[in-house]
Length: 162
Ligand SMILES: [Zn+2]
Image 1 (tube, rainbow, N blue to C red):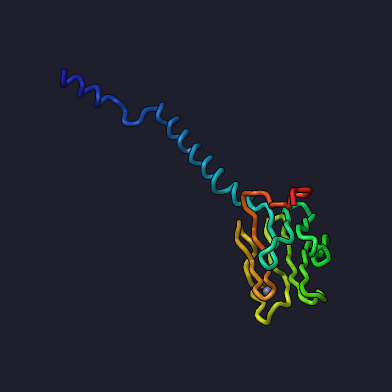
Image 2 (tube, rainbow, N blue to C red):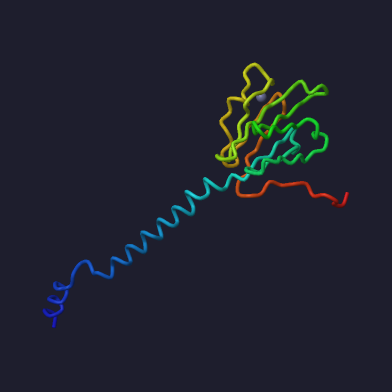
């Protein structure tokens, strides 16, 4: 009996044909998980960005909307959107002599500060473009541009209880 079992074991192929489907199944599963968790989020999770001045949200922009929403009425005449250049310019001061120009890239779903007159060093202009939920900060202008990732930009509720 013992000898017969040994012969049977020797005759058995180390690699069965049916195993191929298991390996293919695992490979497909790995590929699917890779695409789902690694590739797709990078191209779709950057929904837009919020513009904050002095810690207060003043505007939000959804990539592809070509329609920024001004969320603070006191900034309605201080935020200028140029649709052809796709830039959002935020002005400061009583005479609006200070500014930051935010250049929007809807295709790449990112934004960068293209120009500003905040300081000699212009740190905000040299900050890399938004990626995910990263932020661009302009300290002299108390400006913060925050990438909105995975969640829709928050809009103020209208007609709420005071
Ligand atoms: Zn700056």
